[in-house]
Image (cartoon, rainbow, N blue to C red; front, side, top):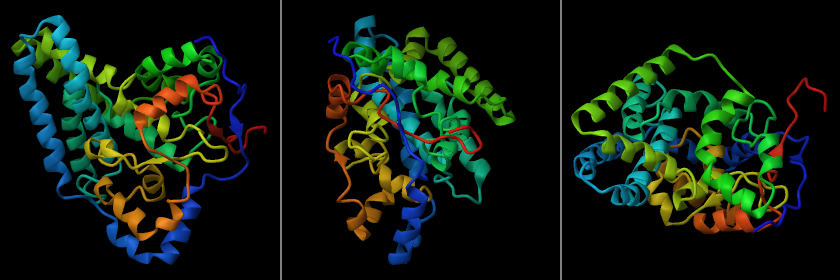
Length: 321
């Protein structure tokens, strides 16, 4: 468990991120893909039903023992909340109501955020859209671990701890790497979430609130659905910085596993990403891909060639290279 990683630096490249150029090539060959652009009219009903189910679950778990509460948080509540986080991801791209109704998307993001327990929908969008536009940028892309993370968690046991602590890094890393002043919508997001949390505690009890927050935290760490955090951009094959996963967990994560397809076409909702692969298979079948998010977590922890350093980075334009 003390084996150290074999890398001592990130993979620095001088090329642009690959998705914009590949998008252009694919659209030139398959212009019919443009018909997949737009929002999914069924999405709001699916995500809204998940919010309702999680809210109703609070009246069941409020009487659980503490041990049962933890199990329920990990096996049920956490999965549902992680799925809602990925619903927020869809909403961040305006795929719930379309680009013509941005405030409808923001309001629905507030709603899907409620069972997660921690206000994140607006802040996530602010940083996530930059991750798409500036993938790998040493300053702007806050999806990349900090140098301190890479240095501290550079052994098998260290990576195991790092995976467990992923929620902390995802929450606080943007504030360290690329801090931004809070926006009006972020403040509204916080106020709405606090009101909801207070109502849950007052009307249902502390156990219900703990169930929500604990589930969100557990399902972002050492959990099968959290494998996508690592599978998406950690360099398991040299030179490849985005990876897709085509397994069954896509059914409960809005097809976030189709990650090359998503970065190539962020204006296409998750429900239609499999169609992208069907139309243009030669662009995706030959690229390295993952078959299991659980296996991704295992390989990340035990393989000395993979770790927080295994990310492709680019120097920010204007900074010394």
